[in-house]
Image 1: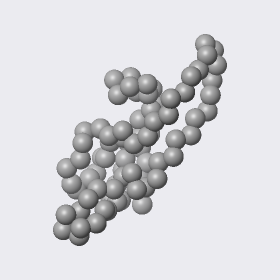
Image 2: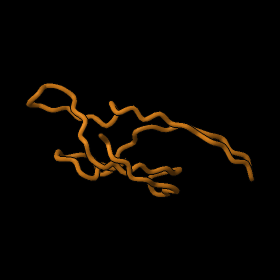
Image 3: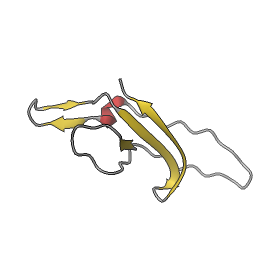
Image 4: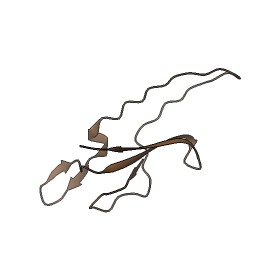
Length: 77
């Protein structure tokens, strides 16, 4: 995932969830990976608390960060 409008410094890309799935040749599977808003939070030093920004976040799916098969941008509200 990438934070596209963060007001604080964030990693260029961040692993937010994963699931190992074995797929046989010519087989398809539907996989759901939960992404609770808490995984988008950062530690605010001034408030001494975790904060979640309302910003666009790019979600990417692939077998590695070098091989992204799908992506979508969602707006956190």
